[in-house]
Length: 400
Ligand SMILES: Cc1cc2nc3c(=O)[nH]c(=O)nc-3n(C[C@H](O)[C@H](O)[C@H](O)COP(=O)(O)OP(=O)(O)OC[C@H]3O[C@@H](n4cnc5c(N)ncnc54)[C@H](O)[C@@H]3O)c2cc1C
Image 1: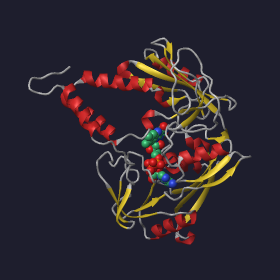
Image 2 (image 1 turned 90 degrees about the vertical axis):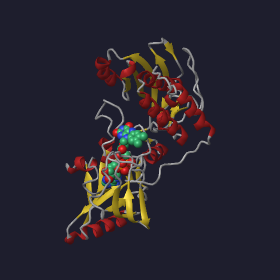
Image 3 (image 1 turned 180 degrees about the vertical axis):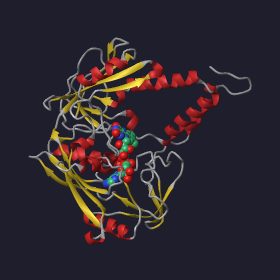
Image 4 (image 1 turned 90 degrees about the horizontal axis):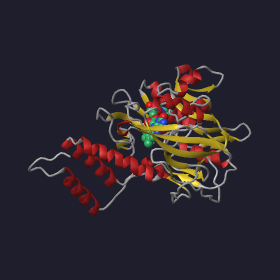
Protein backbone atom coordinates (compact mmCIF):
# COMPACT_ATOMS: atom_id res chain seq x y z
CA UNK A 1 0.00 0.00 0.00
CA UNK A 2 1.15 3.52 -0.72
CA UNK A 3 2.13 5.66 2.30
CA UNK A 4 3.66 9.09 2.41
CA UNK A 5 4.63 11.00 5.51
CA UNK A 6 2.32 13.93 6.28
CA UNK A 7 -0.36 12.77 3.87
CA UNK A 8 -3.40 10.93 5.23
CA UNK A 9 -3.31 7.24 4.40
CA UNK A 10 -5.59 6.01 1.69
CA UNK A 11 -7.73 3.79 3.93
CA UNK A 12 -8.13 6.62 6.48
CA UNK A 13 -9.45 8.91 3.77
CA UNK A 14 -11.74 6.22 2.47
CA UNK A 15 -13.13 5.55 5.93
CA UNK A 16 -13.82 9.27 6.53
CA UNK A 17 -15.56 9.43 3.19
CA UNK A 18 -17.78 6.46 4.01
CA UNK A 19 -18.75 7.83 7.41
CA UNK A 20 -19.52 11.24 5.93
CA UNK A 21 -21.70 9.78 3.23
CA UNK A 22 -23.59 7.40 5.48
CA UNK A 23 -24.48 9.99 8.13
CA UNK A 24 -26.12 12.27 5.62
CA UNK A 25 -29.44 11.15 4.27
CA UNK A 26 -29.65 8.76 1.34
CA UNK A 27 -31.59 10.02 -1.65
CA UNK A 28 -32.52 8.79 -5.12
CA UNK A 29 -33.72 10.74 -8.12
CA UNK A 30 -34.55 9.39 -11.56
CA UNK A 31 -32.46 10.85 -14.39
CA UNK A 32 -33.74 14.20 -15.68
CA UNK A 33 -35.65 14.40 -18.97
CA UNK A 34 -33.08 14.52 -21.80
CA UNK A 35 -34.81 17.51 -23.45
CA UNK A 36 -35.19 20.81 -21.62
CA UNK A 37 -36.72 23.93 -23.16
CA UNK A 38 -36.58 27.50 -21.88
CA UNK A 39 -40.12 28.29 -23.02
CA UNK A 40 -42.74 25.68 -23.75
CA UNK A 41 -41.13 23.25 -26.24
CA UNK A 42 -38.93 26.08 -27.69
CA UNK A 43 -35.23 26.89 -27.29
CA UNK A 44 -34.27 23.43 -26.18
CA UNK A 45 -31.18 21.59 -25.07
CA UNK A 46 -30.72 17.87 -25.50
CA UNK A 47 -28.37 15.51 -23.73
CA UNK A 48 -28.29 11.79 -22.94
CA UNK A 49 -29.46 10.05 -19.76
CA UNK A 50 -25.99 10.45 -18.23
CA UNK A 51 -26.34 14.25 -18.60
CA UNK A 52 -23.12 14.35 -20.62
CA UNK A 53 -21.94 13.50 -24.12
CA UNK A 54 -18.36 12.23 -24.50
CA UNK A 55 -17.12 15.70 -25.55
CA UNK A 56 -19.03 17.30 -22.61
CA UNK A 57 -21.00 19.47 -25.03
CA UNK A 58 -24.74 20.01 -24.70
CA UNK A 59 -26.64 20.15 -27.98
CA UNK A 60 -29.25 22.74 -28.86
CA UNK A 61 -32.43 22.50 -30.87
CA UNK A 62 -35.01 25.06 -31.96
CA UNK A 63 -37.96 23.11 -30.58
CA UNK A 64 -39.36 19.70 -29.74
CA UNK A 65 -42.54 18.07 -31.07
CA UNK A 66 -44.45 15.35 -29.24
CA UNK A 67 -46.70 13.54 -31.76
CA UNK A 68 -49.23 11.15 -30.23
CA UNK A 69 -50.30 9.35 -33.41
CA UNK A 70 -48.78 8.41 -36.75
CA UNK A 71 -50.95 11.07 -38.38
CA UNK A 72 -49.52 13.77 -36.11
CA UNK A 73 -46.03 12.42 -36.81
CA UNK A 74 -46.60 12.78 -40.56
CA UNK A 75 -47.76 16.40 -40.05
CA UNK A 76 -44.66 17.21 -37.98
CA UNK A 77 -42.26 15.73 -40.57
CA UNK A 78 -44.15 17.41 -43.42
CA UNK A 79 -44.00 20.87 -41.84
CA UNK A 80 -40.30 20.53 -41.02
CA UNK A 81 -39.48 19.26 -44.53
CA UNK A 82 -41.33 22.14 -46.10
CA UNK A 83 -39.39 24.57 -43.88
CA UNK A 84 -36.15 22.74 -44.82
CA UNK A 85 -35.33 22.04 -41.19
CA UNK A 86 -33.03 19.30 -39.87
CA UNK A 87 -34.75 16.72 -37.67
CA UNK A 88 -33.64 14.11 -35.14
CA UNK A 89 -35.63 11.60 -33.14
CA UNK A 90 -35.33 11.73 -29.37
CA UNK A 91 -36.64 9.03 -27.05
CA UNK A 92 -37.86 9.59 -23.53
CA UNK A 93 -34.61 8.00 -22.22
CA UNK A 94 -31.81 8.92 -24.64
CA UNK A 95 -29.53 6.20 -23.31
CA UNK A 96 -27.03 6.25 -26.16
CA UNK A 97 -23.69 7.73 -25.19
CA UNK A 98 -22.67 9.29 -28.57
CA UNK A 99 -24.31 12.47 -29.88
CA UNK A 100 -26.61 10.61 -32.29
CA UNK A 101 -29.58 12.65 -31.23
CA UNK A 102 -28.16 16.14 -31.89
CA UNK A 103 -29.68 18.00 -34.82
CA UNK A 104 -27.13 19.76 -36.96
CA UNK A 105 -27.17 23.40 -35.84
CA UNK A 106 -29.22 25.23 -33.25
CA UNK A 107 -32.47 25.51 -35.19
CA UNK A 108 -33.10 21.82 -35.71
CA UNK A 109 -36.26 20.01 -34.68
CA UNK A 110 -36.41 17.20 -32.15
CA UNK A 111 -39.23 14.70 -32.64
CA UNK A 112 -39.94 12.83 -29.43
CA UNK A 113 -41.41 9.33 -29.34
CA UNK A 114 -42.45 9.76 -25.70
CA UNK A 115 -46.17 9.52 -26.51
CA UNK A 116 -45.88 7.01 -29.35
CA UNK A 117 -46.09 4.33 -26.71
CA UNK A 118 -48.99 2.02 -27.56
CA UNK A 119 -49.25 -1.63 -28.56
CA UNK A 120 -51.09 -1.43 -31.89
CA UNK A 121 -52.00 -5.03 -32.65
CA UNK A 122 -51.37 -8.59 -31.47
CA UNK A 123 -51.99 -11.59 -33.70
CA UNK A 124 -51.80 -14.71 -31.55
CA UNK A 125 -52.22 -17.10 -34.49
CA UNK A 126 -49.43 -15.51 -36.54
CA UNK A 127 -47.46 -14.88 -33.34
CA UNK A 128 -46.84 -11.23 -34.26
CA UNK A 129 -47.11 -8.02 -32.30
CA UNK A 130 -47.11 -4.47 -33.70
CA UNK A 131 -45.99 -1.63 -31.43
CA UNK A 132 -45.32 2.09 -31.74
CA UNK A 133 -41.63 2.95 -31.67
CA UNK A 134 -41.68 4.66 -28.25
CA UNK A 135 -42.90 1.46 -26.55
CA UNK A 136 -40.33 0.15 -24.10
CA UNK A 137 -38.78 -3.29 -24.26
CA UNK A 138 -40.36 -3.91 -20.87
CA UNK A 139 -43.84 -3.14 -22.26
CA UNK A 140 -43.28 -5.37 -25.29
CA UNK A 141 -42.10 -8.31 -23.19
CA UNK A 142 -44.90 -7.99 -20.65
CA UNK A 143 -47.64 -7.55 -23.25
CA UNK A 144 -46.36 -10.51 -25.29
CA UNK A 145 -46.22 -12.70 -22.17
CA UNK A 146 -49.91 -11.96 -21.46
CA UNK A 147 -50.81 -13.84 -24.65
CA UNK A 148 -48.24 -16.61 -24.26
CA UNK A 149 -45.60 -15.12 -26.58
CA UNK A 150 -41.95 -14.19 -26.13
CA UNK A 151 -39.31 -12.07 -27.85
CA UNK A 152 -36.55 -14.70 -27.70
CA UNK A 153 -33.49 -12.43 -27.68
CA UNK A 154 -33.25 -9.02 -26.06
CA UNK A 155 -30.66 -6.62 -24.62
CA UNK A 156 -29.73 -7.10 -20.98
CA UNK A 157 -31.89 -4.27 -19.81
CA UNK A 158 -35.49 -3.44 -20.59
CA UNK A 159 -35.50 0.33 -20.03
CA UNK A 160 -34.97 1.01 -23.75
CA UNK A 161 -37.40 2.01 -26.49
CA UNK A 162 -38.05 -0.12 -29.55
CA UNK A 163 -37.01 2.70 -31.94
CA UNK A 164 -33.80 3.36 -29.97
CA UNK A 165 -32.70 -0.23 -29.58
CA UNK A 166 -33.38 -1.04 -33.24
CA UNK A 167 -31.60 2.12 -34.40
CA UNK A 168 -28.41 1.03 -32.64
CA UNK A 169 -28.64 -2.68 -33.50
CA UNK A 170 -29.07 -3.75 -29.88
CA UNK A 171 -28.79 -7.46 -29.04
CA UNK A 172 -28.65 -10.04 -26.30
CA UNK A 173 -26.26 -13.01 -26.20
CA UNK A 174 -26.59 -15.99 -28.53
CA UNK A 175 -24.70 -17.72 -31.32
CA UNK A 176 -27.73 -19.81 -32.22
CA UNK A 177 -29.90 -19.29 -35.28
CA UNK A 178 -29.62 -15.75 -36.61
CA UNK A 179 -27.91 -14.58 -33.42
CA UNK A 180 -29.31 -12.38 -30.72
CA UNK A 181 -30.12 -9.08 -32.46
CA UNK A 182 -33.62 -7.79 -31.89
CA UNK A 183 -33.88 -6.50 -35.48
CA UNK A 184 -33.73 -10.07 -36.79
CA UNK A 185 -37.23 -10.55 -35.41
CA UNK A 186 -38.72 -7.54 -37.21
CA UNK A 187 -41.07 -8.49 -40.05
CA UNK A 188 -42.56 -5.09 -40.86
CA UNK A 189 -41.85 -1.43 -40.22
CA UNK A 190 -43.69 1.80 -40.87
CA UNK A 191 -41.26 4.67 -41.25
CA UNK A 192 -42.15 8.33 -41.84
CA UNK A 193 -39.70 10.17 -44.06
CA UNK A 194 -39.51 13.49 -45.92
CA UNK A 195 -41.02 13.59 -49.43
CA UNK A 196 -41.56 16.03 -52.27
CA UNK A 197 -44.32 18.61 -52.53
CA UNK A 198 -46.41 16.23 -54.68
CA UNK A 199 -46.57 13.81 -51.72
CA UNK A 200 -47.30 16.48 -49.13
CA UNK A 201 -43.64 16.71 -47.95
CA UNK A 202 -43.86 13.50 -45.91
CA UNK A 203 -44.76 9.89 -46.56
CA UNK A 204 -45.22 6.64 -44.66
CA UNK A 205 -43.13 3.83 -46.09
CA UNK A 206 -44.27 0.33 -45.22
CA UNK A 207 -41.38 -2.11 -45.42
CA UNK A 208 -41.94 -5.85 -45.13
CA UNK A 209 -39.58 -8.83 -45.27
CA UNK A 210 -39.97 -8.79 -49.05
CA UNK A 211 -38.31 -5.33 -49.27
CA UNK A 212 -34.54 -5.37 -49.31
CA UNK A 213 -34.58 -1.84 -47.80
CA UNK A 214 -35.93 -3.30 -44.56
CA UNK A 215 -32.45 -4.37 -43.42
CA UNK A 216 -31.13 -0.82 -43.80
CA UNK A 217 -34.16 0.78 -42.20
CA UNK A 218 -33.98 -1.48 -39.15
CA UNK A 219 -30.51 -0.34 -37.99
CA UNK A 220 -30.50 3.20 -39.33
CA UNK A 221 -29.20 5.27 -36.38
CA UNK A 222 -32.26 7.41 -36.93
CA UNK A 223 -31.07 8.90 -40.25
CA UNK A 224 -33.64 7.38 -42.65
CA UNK A 225 -36.77 8.85 -41.10
CA UNK A 226 -38.85 8.35 -37.98
CA UNK A 227 -39.80 4.76 -37.23
CA UNK A 228 -43.48 4.90 -36.46
CA UNK A 229 -44.48 1.25 -35.90
CA UNK A 230 -42.67 -2.07 -35.78
CA UNK A 231 -44.07 -5.60 -36.15
CA UNK A 232 -42.19 -8.45 -34.46
CA UNK A 233 -42.41 -12.16 -35.13
CA UNK A 234 -42.50 -13.72 -31.69
CA UNK A 235 -42.16 -17.26 -30.35
CA UNK A 236 -44.17 -19.31 -27.88
CA UNK A 237 -43.35 -18.42 -24.29
CA UNK A 238 -40.56 -20.43 -22.68
CA UNK A 239 -38.59 -20.55 -19.48
CA UNK A 240 -34.86 -20.40 -19.01
CA UNK A 241 -32.48 -22.33 -16.83
CA UNK A 242 -29.37 -20.59 -15.55
CA UNK A 243 -26.15 -21.75 -13.93
CA UNK A 244 -23.16 -19.52 -13.22
CA UNK A 245 -19.77 -21.18 -13.20
CA UNK A 246 -16.52 -19.33 -12.40
CA UNK A 247 -13.29 -20.70 -13.87
CA UNK A 248 -9.78 -19.42 -14.45
CA UNK A 249 -9.37 -17.87 -17.89
CA UNK A 250 -6.46 -19.98 -19.20
CA UNK A 251 -8.51 -21.64 -21.91
CA UNK A 252 -11.04 -18.85 -22.48
CA UNK A 253 -10.03 -18.36 -26.12
CA UNK A 254 -10.68 -22.01 -26.94
CA UNK A 255 -13.73 -22.35 -24.72
CA UNK A 256 -15.71 -19.30 -25.85
CA UNK A 257 -17.00 -20.60 -29.19
CA UNK A 258 -17.61 -24.16 -27.97
CA UNK A 259 -19.49 -22.81 -24.97
CA UNK A 260 -21.52 -20.45 -27.15
CA UNK A 261 -22.56 -23.31 -29.41
CA UNK A 262 -23.60 -25.50 -26.48
CA UNK A 263 -26.03 -23.12 -24.77
CA UNK A 264 -28.64 -20.98 -26.47
CA UNK A 265 -28.20 -17.89 -24.26
CA UNK A 266 -24.57 -18.51 -23.29
CA UNK A 267 -22.79 -15.53 -21.78
CA UNK A 268 -19.30 -14.94 -20.43
CA UNK A 269 -18.08 -12.19 -18.11
CA UNK A 270 -14.30 -11.91 -18.33
CA UNK A 271 -12.22 -10.36 -15.55
CA UNK A 272 -8.74 -10.31 -17.16
CA UNK A 273 -7.03 -8.66 -14.18
CA UNK A 274 -8.31 -11.44 -11.95
CA UNK A 275 -7.64 -14.16 -14.52
CA UNK A 276 -11.23 -15.29 -14.15
CA UNK A 277 -14.14 -15.96 -16.47
CA UNK A 278 -17.72 -16.36 -15.29
CA UNK A 279 -19.69 -18.63 -17.62
CA UNK A 280 -23.46 -18.33 -17.62
CA UNK A 281 -24.93 -21.63 -18.72
CA UNK A 282 -28.31 -20.44 -19.91
CA UNK A 283 -30.80 -22.58 -21.81
CA UNK A 284 -34.42 -22.60 -22.90
CA UNK A 285 -36.63 -25.07 -21.00
CA UNK A 286 -40.28 -25.97 -21.15
CA UNK A 287 -42.94 -23.78 -19.59
CA UNK A 288 -44.02 -26.91 -17.70
CA UNK A 289 -40.95 -26.62 -15.51
CA UNK A 290 -42.15 -25.73 -12.03
CA UNK A 291 -41.06 -23.13 -9.49
CA UNK A 292 -40.74 -19.43 -9.42
CA UNK A 293 -37.65 -17.27 -9.22
CA UNK A 294 -36.67 -13.77 -10.18
CA UNK A 295 -33.56 -12.41 -11.87
CA UNK A 296 -33.14 -8.74 -11.03
CA UNK A 297 -29.58 -8.17 -12.26
CA UNK A 298 -27.76 -6.18 -9.59
CA UNK A 299 -25.81 -3.71 -11.76
CA UNK A 300 -29.03 -2.58 -13.50
CA UNK A 301 -31.00 -1.81 -10.33
CA UNK A 302 -31.64 1.77 -9.32
CA UNK A 303 -28.87 2.96 -7.06
CA UNK A 304 -29.02 5.60 -4.29
CA UNK A 305 -27.33 8.81 -5.36
CA UNK A 306 -25.05 8.69 -2.32
CA UNK A 307 -23.84 5.22 -3.23
CA UNK A 308 -22.94 6.47 -6.72
CA UNK A 309 -21.13 9.43 -5.17
CA UNK A 310 -19.25 7.14 -2.81
CA UNK A 311 -18.24 5.01 -5.75
CA UNK A 312 -16.97 8.04 -7.64
CA UNK A 313 -15.06 9.42 -4.64
CA UNK A 314 -13.46 6.04 -4.06
CA UNK A 315 -12.30 5.98 -7.69
CA UNK A 316 -10.92 9.50 -7.39
CA UNK A 317 -9.08 8.75 -4.17
CA UNK A 318 -7.55 5.64 -5.71
CA UNK A 319 -6.48 7.69 -8.72
CA UNK A 320 -5.04 10.40 -6.46
CA UNK A 321 -2.90 7.91 -4.58
CA UNK A 322 -2.07 6.00 -7.78
CA UNK A 323 -2.66 2.89 -5.75
CA UNK A 324 -2.96 -0.03 -8.15
CA UNK A 325 -3.09 -2.62 -5.36
CA UNK A 326 -6.15 -1.06 -3.81
CA UNK A 327 -7.80 -0.69 -7.17
CA UNK A 328 -7.34 -4.40 -7.71
CA UNK A 329 -8.69 -5.17 -4.25
CA UNK A 330 -11.77 -3.04 -4.80
CA UNK A 331 -12.35 -4.79 -8.13
CA UNK A 332 -12.03 -8.19 -6.45
CA UNK A 333 -14.44 -7.12 -3.73
CA UNK A 334 -17.05 -6.04 -6.28
CA UNK A 335 -16.78 -9.31 -8.18
CA UNK A 336 -16.98 -11.42 -5.03
CA UNK A 337 -19.98 -9.43 -3.71
CA UNK A 338 -21.75 -9.86 -7.04
CA UNK A 339 -21.19 -13.58 -6.82
CA UNK A 340 -22.35 -13.76 -3.20
CA UNK A 341 -25.50 -11.88 -4.17
CA UNK A 342 -25.99 -14.40 -6.98
CA UNK A 343 -25.89 -11.53 -9.54
CA UNK A 344 -29.46 -10.69 -8.51
CA UNK A 345 -30.99 -14.16 -8.84
CA UNK A 346 -33.55 -15.04 -6.19
CA UNK A 347 -35.58 -18.18 -5.64
CA UNK A 348 -38.81 -16.39 -4.85
CA UNK A 349 -38.30 -12.73 -5.68
CA UNK A 350 -36.84 -12.05 -2.22
CA UNK A 351 -34.33 -14.61 -1.05
CA UNK A 352 -31.51 -16.50 -2.57
CA UNK A 353 -30.84 -19.77 -0.78
CA UNK A 354 -27.23 -20.83 -0.76
CA UNK A 355 -27.00 -24.57 -0.60
CA UNK A 356 -24.38 -27.16 -1.12
CA UNK A 357 -25.40 -29.67 -3.66
CA UNK A 358 -29.11 -29.82 -2.78
CA UNK A 359 -31.88 -28.66 -4.99
CA UNK A 360 -34.84 -26.79 -3.64
CA UNK A 361 -38.18 -27.31 -5.20
CA UNK A 362 -40.30 -24.17 -5.32
CA UNK A 363 -44.02 -24.04 -5.96
CA UNK A 364 -46.01 -21.56 -8.09
CA UNK A 365 -44.35 -21.35 -11.46
CA UNK A 366 -44.54 -17.99 -13.23
CA UNK A 367 -44.19 -18.03 -16.96
CA UNK A 368 -42.80 -15.26 -19.14
CA UNK A 369 -39.93 -13.88 -21.08
CA UNK A 370 -38.66 -10.88 -19.22
CA UNK A 371 -35.39 -9.08 -19.77
CA UNK A 372 -32.54 -9.34 -17.45
CA UNK A 373 -33.27 -6.35 -15.33
CA UNK A 374 -36.20 -7.87 -13.60
CA UNK A 375 -36.89 -11.27 -14.85
CA UNK A 376 -39.05 -13.92 -13.33
CA UNK A 377 -37.35 -17.21 -12.85
CA UNK A 378 -38.73 -20.52 -11.99
CA UNK A 379 -36.71 -22.69 -9.80
CA UNK A 380 -35.18 -25.29 -12.00
CA UNK A 381 -31.58 -26.11 -12.51
CA UNK A 382 -30.12 -22.69 -12.06
CA UNK A 383 -27.21 -22.64 -9.78
CA UNK A 384 -24.07 -20.75 -9.10
CA UNK A 385 -20.90 -22.69 -9.03
CA UNK A 386 -17.23 -22.18 -8.99
CA UNK A 387 -14.94 -24.84 -10.31
CA UNK A 388 -12.12 -23.09 -8.53
CA UNK A 389 -13.73 -23.45 -5.16
CA UNK A 390 -15.25 -26.80 -5.98
CA UNK A 391 -18.63 -25.91 -4.56
CA UNK A 392 -22.07 -25.73 -5.95
CA UNK A 393 -23.76 -22.70 -4.57
CA UNK A 394 -27.41 -22.38 -4.87
CA UNK A 395 -30.48 -23.91 -6.22
CA UNK A 396 -32.28 -24.01 -9.46
CA UNK A 397 -33.69 -20.99 -11.23
CA UNK A 398 -35.39 -20.57 -14.54
CA UNK A 399 -35.92 -17.31 -16.31
CA UNK A 400 -38.76 -16.49 -18.47
C1 LIG B 1 -28.23 -0.12 -18.72
C2 LIG B 1 -28.08 -0.35 -20.22
C3 LIG B 1 -27.95 -1.63 -20.69
C4 LIG B 1 -27.81 -1.88 -22.05
N1 LIG B 1 -27.69 -3.16 -22.47
C5 LIG B 1 -27.53 -3.40 -23.78
C6 LIG B 1 -27.42 -4.75 -24.27
O1 LIG B 1 -27.48 -5.71 -23.53
N2 LIG B 1 -27.24 -4.93 -25.60
C7 LIG B 1 -27.17 -3.88 -26.47
O2 LIG B 1 -26.98 -4.12 -27.67
N3 LIG B 1 -27.28 -2.60 -26.06
C8 LIG B 1 -27.45 -2.34 -24.74
N4 LIG B 1 -27.56 -1.04 -24.31
C9 LIG B 1 -27.47 0.05 -25.30
C10 LIG B 1 -28.85 0.43 -25.80
O3 LIG B 1 -29.45 -0.65 -26.48
C11 LIG B 1 -28.78 1.62 -26.78
O4 LIG B 1 -28.09 2.68 -26.17
C12 LIG B 1 -30.17 2.07 -27.21
O5 LIG B 1 -30.03 2.85 -28.37
C13 LIG B 1 -30.85 2.89 -26.15
O6 LIG B 1 -32.21 3.01 -26.43
P1 LIG B 1 -32.98 4.36 -26.22
O7 LIG B 1 -34.41 4.01 -26.35
O8 LIG B 1 -32.53 5.10 -25.03
O9 LIG B 1 -32.54 5.13 -27.58
P2 LIG B 1 -31.75 6.50 -27.80
O10 LIG B 1 -30.40 6.39 -27.22
O11 LIG B 1 -32.60 7.63 -27.36
O12 LIG B 1 -31.69 6.54 -29.40
C14 LIG B 1 -30.74 5.79 -30.14
C15 LIG B 1 -30.75 6.22 -31.61
O13 LIG B 1 -31.95 5.76 -32.24
C16 LIG B 1 -32.64 6.86 -32.85
N5 LIG B 1 -34.07 6.60 -32.68
C17 LIG B 1 -34.77 6.36 -31.56
N6 LIG B 1 -36.07 6.16 -31.81
C18 LIG B 1 -36.22 6.28 -33.15
C19 LIG B 1 -37.32 6.21 -34.03
N7 LIG B 1 -38.56 5.98 -33.58
N8 LIG B 1 -37.12 6.39 -35.34
C20 LIG B 1 -35.87 6.65 -35.83
N9 LIG B 1 -34.79 6.74 -35.04
C21 LIG B 1 -34.95 6.56 -33.73
C22 LIG B 1 -32.18 8.10 -32.10
O14 LIG B 1 -32.30 9.26 -32.90
C23 LIG B 1 -30.74 7.75 -31.83
O15 LIG B 1 -29.98 8.01 -32.98
C24 LIG B 1 -27.76 -0.77 -22.97
C25 LIG B 1 -27.91 0.53 -22.50
C26 LIG B 1 -28.07 0.76 -21.14
C27 LIG B 1 -28.23 2.17 -20.65
